[in-house]
Image 1: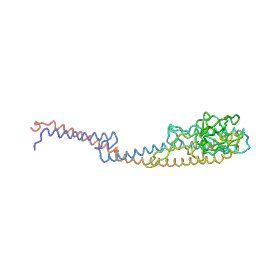
Image 2: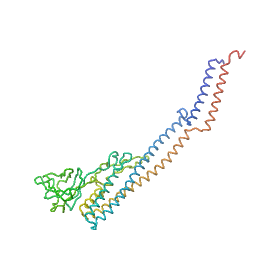
Image 3: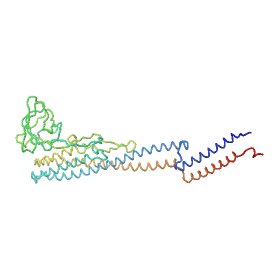
Image 4: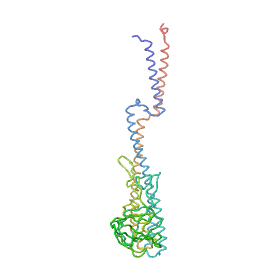
Length: 395
């Protein structure tokens, strides 16, 4: 069989390329410390690593959500602890004000404490973490509460359900009394007369509710009464049936919590709906903290011990609502912390599994590189010798 010079060249070049490719491959593995750098290194292993990395990415996402949840819940827990302390202080003040041991001047001073308590709680309800509101549900960018007005009823002027809407603001209490009988909204012929005072009864302004109208306008604020309401008439100024328009707070967040998945099919609420904890004028919460505190302040400012006493149990019930919310948050924190620990261990196992498939053995790779280098040099030397031969070598 005859072997041509071109065949010799082709074979030797192929051997050089093969040995050099192997040498370079091993050096790349040594440099990256990875056994699989391209799909051709190990197709099955590469597919397995890809699957493991995808799972690791999901776990990393869950861990990040756990971290966010724990931070948010921790902040909410701290806020509710502060609110609880403020309510405890307000309870002590309310209990004092419910007895006739203290005179009107004392009650007025206590009212200031109650209003300061309200303002402090209002500030807490608008707490934000990383520019996200904690108590506004999934309305993260806005505040949970805003200043508004509410109504405190006195001596059964009408039922609370008669007040269907409020708007505007007021810097002082507005005492309102009806001075003529009639039916609001449905009486198209007769107007209703009323009077109001913005200085706790020292001076009064007379006004008229037009026939068929349901809105009482006081300049900076107004209230809407249900059509068909029949208010009781007061005879003495500042005494008997009436109602007081006063400062309050309205919930401006959403009715839904924001949720984060902290594991597969395991959503966790990380924000709270403030109106379900603190109430407000537009909340259906029975134990309405903001409204109860506002009523207490008004009764104190009017020197009504019996009114203050009527709010004592209500304020205690509001405290229970806040305490229950704090307990729920604590349970969520424990769950998120446990999940985070579990996911951390699982991720460590994933990392180890990826390493087992993908990483090189440092000692073994050095040995293989030495062998590949030896082979490559041997091929070069052999090729050099073969290429240097001619017919003279056979003569």
